[in-house]
Length: 253
Image 1 (cartoon, helix red, strand yellow):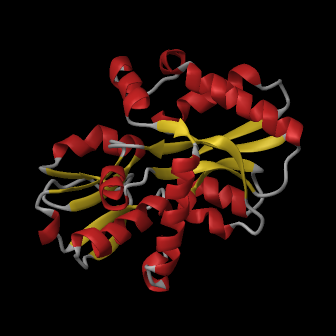
Image 2: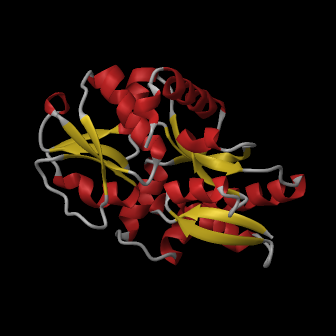
């Protein structure tokens, strides 16, 4: 049985739908988690494959990208945002959602290379503290969709990256921490493709906090699920700049 770390955000429900519909009973076991927890499960060998935040792929001793599907964006992604009560040029502190290191690294990179600011970066636990509209936050996933509209200034990080690099962005991709059999990878990818082709059914099947039409439009218009050559180029560029242009101190999260 292959253990799968499956992120429990709205943007992954097409994948979950396809896996549950197409994979044989007893072939997989899914563990639902945050992006950061997915990376930890793979690092500790408590999962075999998962939707790995691209900023953490290098933490694996033997990583294998096993699918041509991902969580990516070719325009505004809507669910990874820096939000603030003041213009970004005036921000002195960014409170970071630490559920995904990729988004943290991307925020730090944008501060340095595009916004030209040097704020204080502070981890923030959204389960224990309330948001304050005068502050600046990195929000990811369902938190960004639910709360991002309440801030005066909003910076969509996929849109910011694309404007700077002229490349799409990949937030997470299906990665294994060991070689998997070709037969499993083939059936796994067929299941993911099935889910992406049945987004309306996935939206209807699973419980989430959003109106059905809103969820469908988000998955249709904001998330790009295919890991094509352009996204692979964007992935390679992000990994290059995250490693080369950020100092070790800045990369730690």
